[in-house]
Amino acid sequence: MRSWTALRIVVHDRSSTAGALLGVIAIVFLVGQQLSVLFGLLNYMSVLVDHSGADAWITSADLRNADAGNLISARYMDRVIGLGEVAWVEPVLIGNGLFRTPDGSFEAVRVVGVRRPRLAGGPWEFAAADERALFDLEAVAVDRLDLEKLGNPALDAVTEIGDRRVRVRAVTEGARAFQGTLVFASLDKVKEIARAPPGRYSALLVRFQPQADTAAALARLRAVLPECSVYSTAELARLTQAYYFLQTGIGGSFGFSTGIAVLIGVVIISLTMYTSVLGRSRDFAVIRALGGRRRDVAVIVISQALLIAGAGMFVGFVLLAALLDATRGSSIPSYFPAAVPPILAGVTVAVSLLGSLVALRVALKAEPASVFH
Image (cartoon, rainbow, N blue to C red; front, top):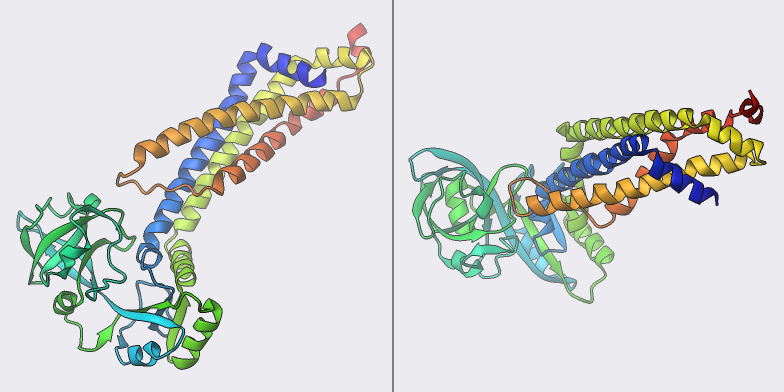
C-alpha cells in the first residue's frame, strides 16, 4: 500500500518527477560517458602490452611505464630460452620516426619492430591485408583511424619513415596508442629507422609453456636476470596505466568532471524531491492523522526515490548505450567494461537516496494536528 501510494505520487506530480528524473539521467549518462572515455584512454595506454600475446616482458631496470624503457642486450635471450618453463622469447624494438605523407609533409610516428616469422608483439587485427604483409622487409602497417593523419596513403604506396624507404602493405584495426601513431614493421627495418645499436632491443617478450606455473616462472626469470625488470603482461599493463593516469593529470581531470556530474545530480534530485514533499506536506499530515506512522511516511518518500532512480537509470543507460554504439570504431576513445554498469547503478541509487534525505526530513515533520487547523 505504501509503495502504491508512492507510485501514485510520482505519476501525479509530473513536474517534480521530471526534475528528479533529469538528475538521475544526468548521473548515469554523464558519469558513464566520462568513464567510457577514461577506460578507452586506459586501453590506449597499454595497447601494445595487452595485445602482445606474451606472458611476460623483460625490460630495462626500474621501468616506470612500457613506453619509457632503455634498450637491453640481445644476450639475455640466450639465458631465457634455455629455461624449461619458456616456450619462446622474441625481441621487440620501439623507436620514433617521421612519416612522409603524400603531400610531402611529415608526421611523427612510433615504429614497432617485430621479428619474423612469429611477429610477436605485432598487429593483432587488420582492416586490410594481414600479418603476412610484414614478411616483406620494406612493409609497414598503419592503423585505419590514423590514415587521415598520415595523408591517406594508398595500399602499396611507397613513402619514407626516418629517411628510410617503406611501403604501406597493411592497415590495422584498433592499434592506437596513447603515446602517438603506431606503425608496425619488421625488426630489421625499425633498426634502420631508429638507428638502434646492433644487438639491442626495447624489450623481450616471453611465452611460457602451457603447463608452467606463471608465478614460479616469473620468479625464475627474475632470478636469472637480476639486472632487468621482469613483469607479467598484466603487471606491466597496470604499471603503464597507473603512470599515465597519475602523472599526466588525466586522473584529476576525469575525477573532477565526474564529481561535478554527481554533484549536479544530487542537487537536482534534492531540490525537486524537497519541492515535491513541501507541496504535499498536508497529505503526509493526513496520513499521520489517519494512523500512519513516521515509518510509513519514510517508506513512501524512499519508495519515490527508488522509483525515480529506476526509471532514470533505464533512460540513462539507453542513452549511454546509444552513444557507445555510435562512437564504436571512431577516433573517440570509448570502452565500457562489463563490471562498470552494476557499480554505476549502485552509486546512482545511493545518490538518489542521499538526495531524498532533505525531503525525508520535511516529510517526517508533518504534524497530524495541522490537518485540523
